[in-house]
Image (cartoon, rainbow, N blue to C red; front, side, top):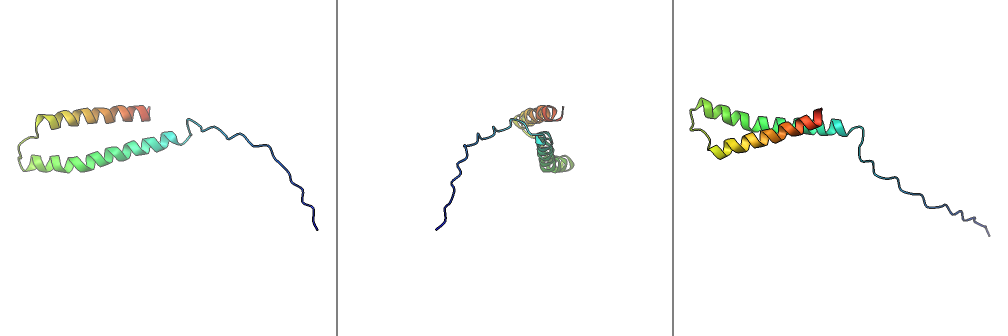
Length: 82
């Protein structure tokens, strides 16, 4: 017959979630770079082919969308880089 001791420990408080981590800046900067590479890799060849083949220009709404989205990416990049 054995006697076992029961040791009770007080419950520990969970550590709060850190709002920032030291690698956050690098992760988001890398992600923004991947977004730019995806956008440029997807649209530059199509635009270059259109220019080379003398296709009619894109509608105005496409140009407006491109300017707004590129502006948003520029703001996102400036926010993450600086």
